[in-house]
Image (tube, rainbow, N blue to C red; front, side):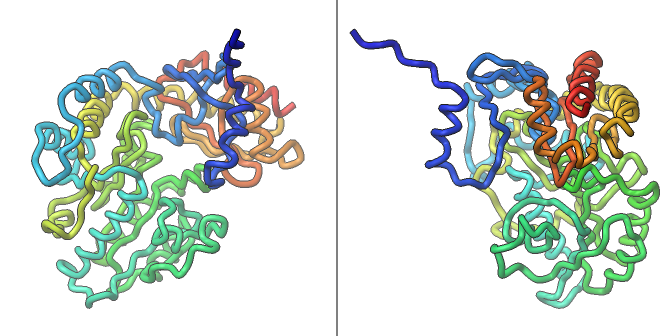
Length: 405
């Protein structure tokens, strides 16, 4: 008689990954098998409150009904044509995304890094065709401690040696200045500058929020200098900070927006470069492309995401619940928390290193049924789905207080 197959445990599955997966991640030791809303469940049936939301890719929670329905409906119709042909979902998606962000045109891509790479190409093409920068001399100014992705071009202008070391030689044409320093930015901009590329809030660096007026200053400086302001809103955009876009906190409209993560609703990779017509209009057939960019399934899910944001509900939730998050973290300052930065439902929390590293704090939270992730040193980031309830949020803060004692 054959013995029944033994259910594989988290430990079994983690060990099975070791010989066959490249070791480019160091995940927490939890193996997620199911998820819904703000909760995930591992293979043993343990439940966890998700306070990371896929680095903002899951702004609307796991398997949001409207997004799942849109995906199922499209799966029964058409999934891919490539851009060799038109399809019936793309124009509507692009028009609504442009309207939501106050821009004119959309270049659909797949991942956040692809959006950044595409934005770099567009900025350089604009510099040559419109600004008149001599061939191959265009420069782009970026900020230290940035995180825009992990392609070789992007890590080439990173100041994180873990991301950068061992991957050169790197693409030239980038100037790195301190973040939140308008004087340094102005000194770096000259007649060759195609664009200033920054995150309105630096996520990977620890949710670093610039001083009030910094984004306004970037906008004014780039306008005076005749170069583009490219805002990477891949993590900060689409409701996370209590506004549709983080730049809206200063009423700033960049020339180009880079979007991703939440645009795919946690279902498919969707990203986009969104900008003014005179900027994105520099691209012509054959100069840039993507087999999967703007595919029917992505366009259907992306349209459903835009529909959710058009109501303003999720932006309001992030703003209102963000008050609970901020007040709760304020109560923990001096009780294991050295300081924090928060905007909407997004926070970087600096824990006393004597209590533990960010990794160790995240592991303790996991044992309390809360999933979060460290950034650097003893800093952890909190970015729950915008669907989280006030009670769930307070529960997560209580768990954080417990692991800090």
